[in-house]
Length: 152
Image (cartoon, rainbow, N blue to C red; front, top):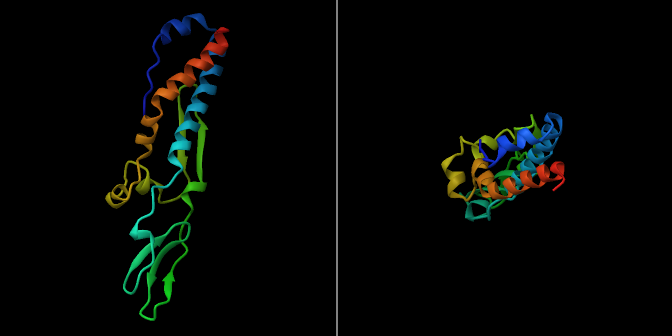
């Protein structure tokens, strides 16, 4: 989880009607979640581990699944990919919390806290690190939404 600190929040709460504040905050938090999702979607560059080779080479073909070279030279494989880049979603949980998640069963080991070392070595970033990359932008989004409510 990433926390974004908003300076002047207590003053803001005093100046705004509770319902208006909650509504502006929900809009802002939803936009922030979308920004994190945008950063999370792209895959890192492919490497040798994604390319075919001669027997007994094994590789992972993106959007399909594991592959291997047979003695005969033909490729073998299984189509197990859940196409992680297509199943990201966001959900606003409250005026202070949103969820950015992925429906692929293996996502926690690719982008989550349980990330496997080989995914890190292959350039995959954790979702939390993706969120940190847009922290400044999230603060700006929040400020813009609140300014709209304040008429500024």
